[in-house]
Length: 369
Image (cartoon, rainbow, N blue to C red; front, side, top):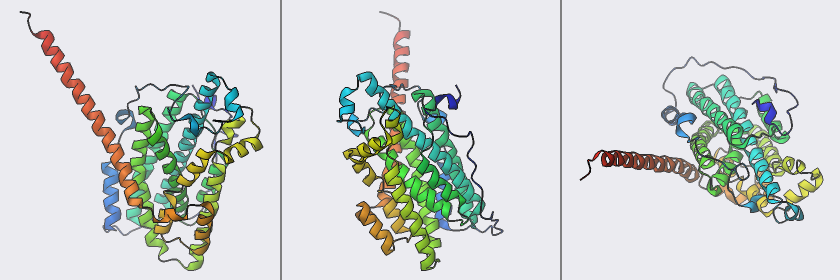
């Protein structure tokens, strides 16, 4: 079935074309480069994996509850609208929310793939080009996996959120080579990681847990890459240049906080846009979610050297200023460990199954007394 047949609302055009800007840069310096970045590049090569083999696609997903997350996470839960819904309606709502969330993940991963390719093209240092080439492959794999989950297990897609598309477009249209790092690696990827983590840690379904854990293992490297590259570069910028980038961060953070709430889902259930926005504003879950969205962004922004007074005031206004002292390295290490533990659990289960199969074959082959 064509993807376009699965969209709740068809995209306005089959292709979105963003005019390219900035220079493609070649480096004739083939020396070893920065040790930390080359170590990350080696790790990126070592950690490549095949989504067809590492993920168990035979696992079933209930279309009426694809994630098994608590209903309290749904904006309509506890409202008069929820009370009037049949169980079938509620199942359809769960399906729509899953479709909306994973569709934004899918579109974001395609954006990350394009941004990573743009970094290969525009970044001046060869070691950064090397690593970003591995990231481009990672993002292609992520888009493939999210697309497959939506097509085969959910059977429904949502178009890209207008505000996500706007931030992505601003990132790609900027001619400065560091902006794909800042817009994608720090903002969009940071927000996505927090969203992935909330679902990974609350879902009761093994298939989405596998998908999210393995994607997050890759993203831990990507964030480390962005931090290394921008931290080194931003030490060289003037105060005025740093303030320009802080303004971009402030605008992007407000945009994502206020506009990524799934209003489109509620509209598909006959709720007007204004009421849908008000319901979202009063959702306790969404308030918590919005704060957690910045758990990866704020410490990263501080770490790379964007911590001016105006940016700090914006984070105080958002109620996330204290996240600047979070241990980002610990969060990323936990992301990697969760994925590795899933692998260990799966390999142990497969080994037990093989042993049981051999023992059964031996027992069947033993002559009777």
